[in-house]
Image (cartoon, rainbow, N blue to C red; front, side):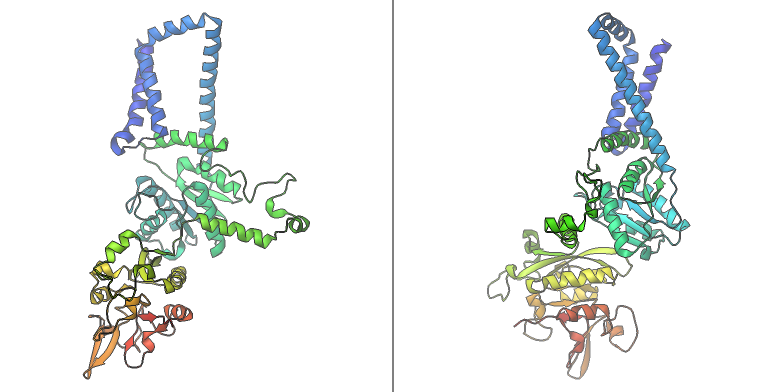
Length: 500
């Protein structure tokens, strides 16, 4: 009876341990599926032990049966030894201490809407502790945006650490990656581009440190581990799943396996591709510069773009029609086909990274892509970038909310003439702090309401656009004129571009 009780109890324990994530969080993956299967096998074995032993004895009496059972025992022992070896690797990886003030790379994980998952919070808490202890360390937050995520994992991590008090000047976003290999390779690009310390620390879950470390090693990085501590009731499930991940990696399988051909792969002569002799380069007719450029172009094509212009989608047309774009295009001086939707990222006044959209004329679409990308790189603060349609097409309401916008089929205030905004050729930036000022009937009028405090341009205050401002410089370099230079009125928020 005791012999039967042991496997029954062991099976029940496994079913509970691996069943908790399924019941509490509806988590089902290869990890807890394996655990539940093992638990069920042990439970059934204990219950039906006499019959199973009798069946095995019958099989053992025949030579083919002995061979079959011997193979099965060998396989089981091999799996146990393999799991033990992997476990040793997992544990040792978490003990690899990073250097002081190494650049921290935080590997992304699931985001629910805009909220970090429990696992991602565990990684970020470990990252926070490291950044507090190493005050001069920079941090790369790496993770793209999944189909069911409202924001990128990198942006979610940025907001989390910002809320915990980490100086955002230490944080760099890498928001295109979808695998661990991409996380590390793309983060390395950021590190090299920004001139950060090339010795890294990897912040990820403790069970994931080994695989991440092996990839870092392949990339030639000196690294250490900053492991996040997984909740006890989730750890068995993810530990079991990670055993499969390590096996896939060892076998050259899975999304994080070493590509068949990489820039660091050794050739038949024992040299890397980047170590070709000048003779070989001449013989192929391709220079190192051309090869490097080709690789960079390929990488850029594969990465999702953060700043780009696209044609108006059906959804955008429906959104703007009857709002910023008239219900009928009869007698319209611009058509949907003349317009583009520009996608950008920007730093808001709190230093948080946000995403925005601008409808503009196709003639200036690429200008805006380049301008806003440069503003983003320099962390130039923009309060909001939303379509004016979110304000019912009310330009005054949009400006009063300090919203930066472009297209709106409307006339110039106080006239019957179409504004350059109606052609999608004018952009307003931080309008509350950079008002429109004119004189009518001897009375000075400042727009929008609430911007009167910023009408005195000799005063010094944040977000003021003048001729020393980066925003002014970028727009004028791209051929835009500035409303702040007008003679009869002043529109300090306004940049427009004229075409013959």
